[in-house]
Image 1 (cartoon, rainbow, N blue to C red):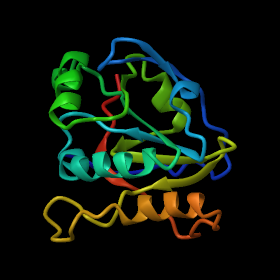
Image 2: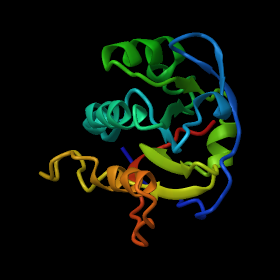
Image 3: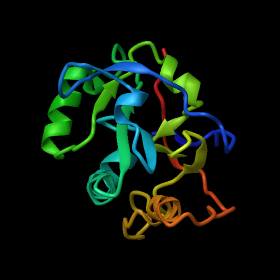
Length: 184
């Protein structure tokens, strides 16, 4: 497991559009389809990464807590499934059901969407405001597997609370750290 930090896409970047298959519904899904009235969270995750497994319950809690407040959520897996078959669409579907995802879980087979977002690791989080401009990118919180810090989603929750309350975002945004995206 290689420790890889986020690339930290520049703030104010317009949300790159995409159209990928949702492994839960088997339907095409675009950014416009998941876009929230107050903001949108785009997450790059996968099934096998220990960093994602460590925080997946909190990711689902955050999506459930903030979806009702007008935020859209989507998870995207961009890993090379030839080398990592456990991240393939059928197992993505199983993972989404097992963890009660209330958001689409999209498969980025070409890896073009990950490249557009400059995604580097799993998990990697991007928060776009109502104007589809990037206001937060980075970590969920300070917890990592084995570091003894409880998973609480503090950083992502703070970014969403700030958007909801029309407050400025923190100037301190820490890179996420996780497994590198498995490029072809």
